Length: 390
Image (cartoon, rainbow, N blue to C red; front, side, top):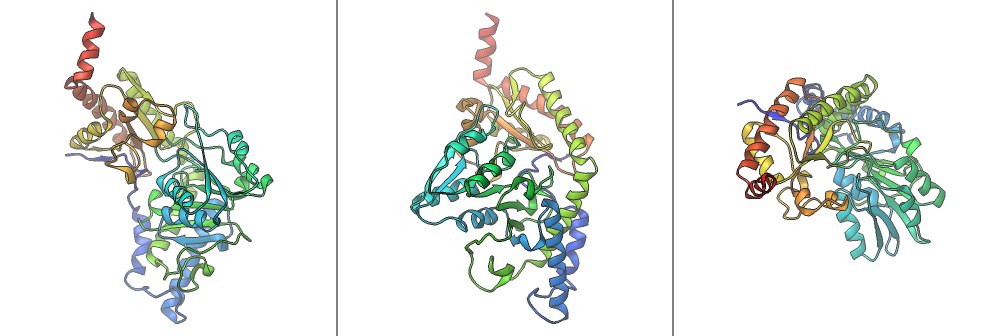
């Protein structure tokens, strides 16, 4: 059976070039980057080269990059490291669970948190962020691109608001990094999170940009690694992989990659919309990252569609991978005002750098076929169809 993977917002395959860059650091160059002998020096040089590559991807200084175990740890360090008991924090109703649950934990610790709503398109209105500011507001944490809809948020405007109010600004850029250009100077953020496995680096790698001069409280204690901001022996192979993936992403961004990927995404999306009835796009009309579309299909369950497509060889998802199996519909889609049933009837399709035109052709063929089959056996759809014939 042919298999096509279109769930790259959950994770991406490690690119062959990334794997080859990592390979020596598992076998020959296996030193601890904190050791001063030959092996350690080679490991340290590799870590610092990767740090420079990640910094270049977001237009930061290498010293402003802290390596972590992934996007979730980066988010936790960027939030808990900047906030104290009694502070007020502003975030949004559509954040990834790494930020959402961190903010809920802050509430339990005695902080106040304001969750900013979004419009029907999934966009945050920057004016609502400004209106939520208080005298004790210490941090604004708003994602750059939503992991389910791909909608890009006005982080440049929010960064200016935070800067003028003298408030820290953290942005979760996990789903934006490597897909759209990022300039931390333009955003004026104090902290920015990325994750390796969203840009074809290995799982278990990530980084947090921390603006020079920003004092952040470590969340892991031990040695003096990462300039005393994140203790623990560096994952040298993973960091090397992240650095190589950052290099590839930067070149891809500068050589027309986003436009080509958006064209493939739009071809798939438009074909599905043209072929079927009772289907639509969540976040349509809003700025989106080029690889993501979130589609709703009335009269069926999204989870059932995901399973049925998998049996046909196509991998997509019904929401965030970390929320797979959740009973409730997506909190992101509900925050956008979708009825529960339509939120349940939505799937996310996300492309990667390995996606081909043939993959898109395959998806265009199997999605309408599979939806039609599920509707044939859906009592709800049959009733709607019967009513329409009366």
